[in-house]
Amino acid sequence: MGSEENTSQSSSYNKSLPSTHLEKQGIKLHKWLLKKLMAKTGLPPFCIRLWDGTQVSAPDPEYTVQINSKSAFYKLMFDPELYFGETYVSGELVIEGDIIKLLEIIFINRSNTKASTSGFTRKLLGTLINPVRNNNLKGSKQNIYHHYDIGNDFYELWLDKEAMQYTCAYYPTENETLEQAQIAKLDHICRKLQLKPGDTVVEAGCGWGGLARHMAKHYGANVRSYNISHQQIVYAREKAKQQAVDHLVEYIEDDYRTINGEYDVFVSVGMLEHVGISHFATLGEVIQRSLKKNGRGLIHSIGRNQPGKMNSWIQKRIFPGAETPSLSQISSIFENQLSVLDIENIRLHYAKTLRHWLERFNDNEERIRTIFDEEFVRIWKLYLSGSIAAFSSGQLQLFQIIFTHNRRNDIPMTREYIYN
Image (cartoon, rainbow, N blue to C red; front, side, top):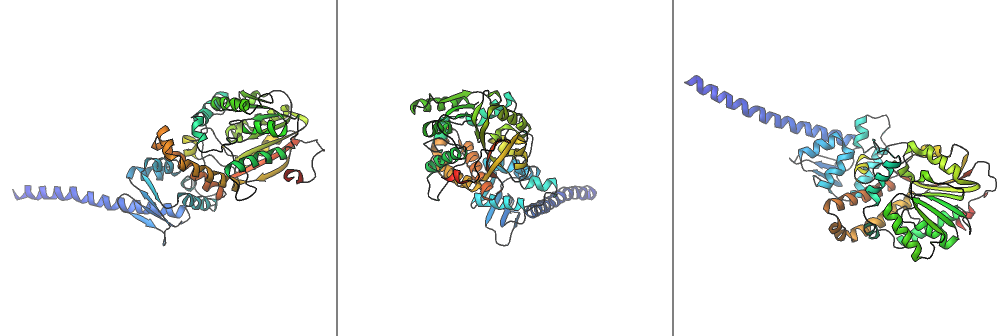
């Protein structure tokens, strides 16, 4: 009888002890992982707190990152660049403090981390990864539809009212409005291209058509613009009629690879990110055959200082198929009979543009929520906030590159023509 009681008590004891022991071991493991996380991110002024109260903190934390579930924690440890966004959108990860400044710190610390560090570290700091969706003719159409054909009404709520530019603006002074800065960007590009009445222009990727209309209306150019977004093309054609420039502007709903004819000017603003680095040689061939002997061209694109991959969360949620190239990768476009004349980096202008966009997005947040839903709002606010941080920290760049045929000698000797 006594033997049975002892056996029962022993069994009960053995069941409870491992549970407590495992819990303690789990807390130790979580704390160890958090310390690794802090170390790998350069010991930022953060406090990272888990659902069970476990936390690791810098001496004087400026921000608190709250992780509300075990599943979210393990997802973050497995693939932080993807699941930071996913858990933030779901509410499993909460940021206490200015998320833009928090992300700036992470990006800056990431840039200070040597490239030779482990794959785990590179994931941890948000390195941009593949796979990239195919940017062949069919794939490009699907990728563009995912982002640009979600409704013109949505973009009208927070882009500029004059030209509907979804690309970096240009701020000659600190006090420019978004509308003024976007018009200034268009003029900046036209001056760089030395645009004059009667010039023929081909544009690869035209957005809502603002640059083409501006070139026609204010510079007397004849413009043919290619774009594979149906909603953007419909919008652009209607605006051209309203502004009485439809006799000078032709919007073609087709891929840049189908461009034919010869032109005085080739221009592409904000499309190179969607081409795919593996297709840069094809783009170079298109430019070669499209540009007249004395022609000139400009490419305006987001880029980076060294080769890297697009963030997996951005790939999934915002820009499927997109890649942000380095200058060395962009240069492959021009290596066959083309010469680069000028490169300007206006990344701080993009940080300012994005702040204007986010401010307007926030002003229209309730309306956007009724059009879509709460998840959509959180996705786009994180995307815009993260983009501000990426440009202000130097994680991303914005390049404007002027080029021409390599044997052309009637080119300006100075940059004076750009500013006068």
